[in-house]
Image 1 (cartoon, rainbow, N blue to C red):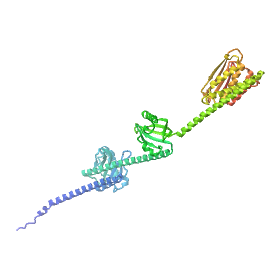
Image 2 (tube, rainbow, N blue to C red):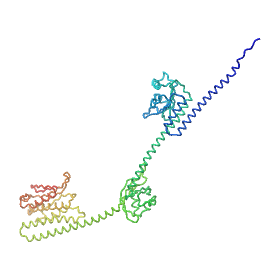
Image 3 (cartoon, rainbow, N blue to C red):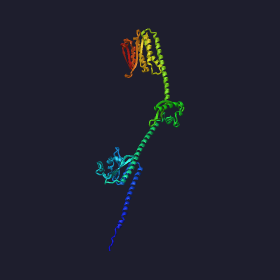
Image 4 (cartoon, rainbow, N blue to C red):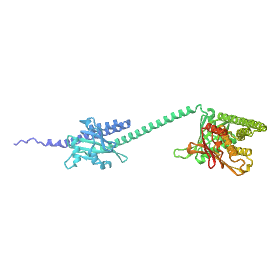
Length: 543
């Protein structure tokens, strides 16, 4: 009888169950891994929402990716000032981390086009058939496998996340790539938000600085105008007041705003004021004028400046005005004008009295001369009488003019020569006087008297010694003009067509009192005298 051996069929009964358990375990591991990655993604997103400190966000991201994906190092590259991708963040667990920070990656330069278009760069291993520049870059960083996922925001390429495997090659599966891409998308959003936040902060600081500068400027403006007699205000196109500063009293500001001048002033005053402002609105050109207004029952005067008020794009949106109260100054000016008029009347009266007194002296000399039989003594009396007459004529001119500084010297010369010709010549009609006088030249009283006496002596000399009783026609010419090229000196010329007697011209002659007087007067004018004797007698004085 044979004994049946034990059957081993029961060993095969459990095999299907064992395979099923292994599959479940693998699914559980994969599920845990997915949960872990989703948890990491949620943590990163939550961290991004919780802070705008970009450096902390990106550093947390590379540290979590390093741990979760179990890589040798995780890096985030961003462009520098020259748009070259440089390592800005490196995971803390990276060996020799400090030497990796700041390095440039040739993989980014070589694959710039693909990365900028949103395509990841994947190398499971570094093989000899790769470009030499990439092989060298991998050797320098001890890279055996690399995954680069670009950072893009609104199609703008702003960096990338790099995963390095340094101990062995590595297959980057689709889940790895998609996971890193999801994190990269959130990192790109975080970078954009941080940049936007930084820009807003910068603009906010600039705005705060501008507002502070405006506040300080307004404070200085208000301080400067606080006690100044100046009213500053703006008006719109309808000439309604929109802003007023430093009005007569603070309580009146509310009653002014929104109103026009026609609602605040007397009709005639408002019409003139609005006419000035309307011209500025129409022309766009500022104006300055003096206006009088009735304020609180009192007549006030203002120096008004009106300028167009323009918007930021240059359009005229109203006017801005500054009105300086000049009432006190106007009052002082009016008093000064009255005082000046009174003084001019007084001075004219003085000149009138001086002229009368000089004429009185001249008349006394004339009466006295009627008792003199000696011709030489009579000639002396007559010469002094003419000198007094020349001074009297100056005062007569000053009495007749409107302004004391404006002596009509041409009119004076005409009167003087007429008087002398009537005095010294038997045939006055035989004497022709030619005048060439620059009427722009103005003489003060002292200079006018000096020049008048000089002319009296020289014209008298010509009439007494050259043109008297010759029975022929004679010429006298007088010129007065300025030399701009010679420091604005004035030239006075007196000439006649006959040659003067030599004994009168030379100083050694006892008959040269007139010429000595001329020299003395020229010296007082700080001038210079030149005498030309032939063919005519010409006296030229420069002063």
